[in-house]
Amino acid sequence: MSKTDANTWPGLGPKWGLILALFLLLFVFFILDLLLGSVPISFGDVWASLWGAESAPKVERNIIQKIRLPKALTAILVGAGLSVGGLQMQTLFRNPLAGPSVLGISSGASLGVALLMFVLGGSGAIWGFANLEISGSSLLVLAASLGAALIFFLILLLSYRIRDNVVLLILGIMMGFITSSLVSIWQYFSDPGLIQDYLIWTFGSLGGVRNEQLMLLSICVGIGILIAFLLSKALNMLLLGENYARGLGLHIQQTRIWIILSTSLLTGSIVGFCGPIGFVGIAVPHLTRSLFNTSDHRILIPTSCLIGAIIMLGCDLIAQLPGYSIALPINAVTALIGAPVVIAVILKRRNLQRSF
Image (cartoon, rainbow, N blue to C red; front, side, top):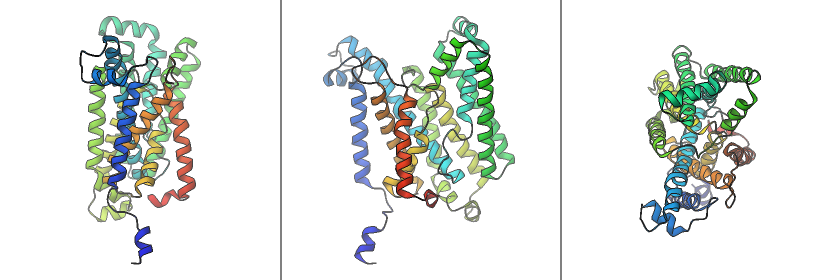
């Protein structure tokens, strides 16, 4: 091999220098997310509040521990979870435009919330407050999780009967259209006030997850990512084509069910707690492949988690408009960042199908 060929040969192992730089960037963005906001707090008070030190003023300590820290941790979980979900869907369907919402699970969560708001309305919320002793946000999470779970079980049942991934992809998209149509019908006949509440939920938010809910979200996202990592070898085989993977001894049907289970767990829990957040699941896997120049899922899964977390923290920094008391919808910010990333990757690589 000539010296020129050796310089252009893609690296087969992880790029440790780049990974270290990404970890440093994650730490910087995490601290900035705690520092910046409508109330200015010094770095010393932030650091003392993180460790629970009494030297930090009580008001600043409460802001950090009860508002900014849960929001920053939620951003990390959302970015990591949606990125891994998108990566799995793109590999399963061998389609660069597939994302975690492609199976209609996000639409199922939206249907659950729409059912709660439009069918039960204010009386349903009052009943929940009085009889279940749960807050309005918890009701939203419960409704979104049940809607996502309903679509997930339908997809799981279909996956037992349908062996073609493309047919399964089309059915998932059709389910998304059906649930969106149902939501549109309910919107048409509903009170404008309820429609406004529903629209606010669809904007997405990282600030609605409380400390006690964060543990449940962490468990769901952690299990989903762990399943994905255990499937790394199977995902690599799927890139070779189903027939070749089957020849290598891979059980295609069983692998597909585990991939759907992992993606559904990630998407359903995140949409349930934070609303539908788009573009991260599509953009981050492409960005990761481009940066690390590999299709090996043993590298792509952890690095997608890292880059997804950094991007979500960056989006949150932009969304909260430091120094102002208002915040932009997180969905609008992710689209503003995600769309140019996808466009840049497409223009640079020109043929994305070579990665699948």
